[in-house]
Length: 188
Image: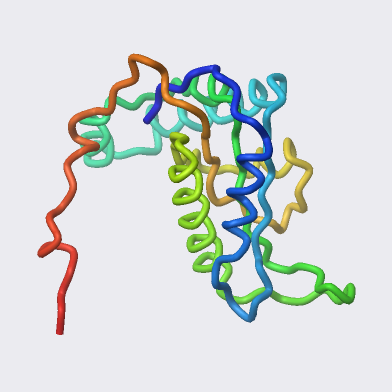
């Protein structure tokens, strides 16, 4: 889903969904994630500009022919207007270290796995709330640390685009093709 309506989404709905994501299982219960909720137009424009710089480099130099061929049926390119059009962006960071409730800085464990599970919870909650999402992952994403005021050691994993779909939004047919259950499930 890459076509978002400008229709507002109440912040409390997003916060409830992020609260659900925060209940995800994680390594040593350190909860090594941080969500930055972005609704400010100027900040979204800044993120869009920085992401498109990385996307242009990807499409022009970094991606090989095989990768570009895999993306072709989805119709993606370096232009990412949805980063400004959608009412909300959620930048999901993984924290390699974090502070415990008693103030002790500690190493976090299973950060990528924990952040991935929390992101799954977040997507499910957002969809349950009737919202559309897009996971965007420009590479590298370190510009998000600066824009979002996060520690340079925190790793931005996903830039989640959230809102309602445009009235005439379409999904590429290729994106609707899913493997049947026997291809993704083995019962032993």
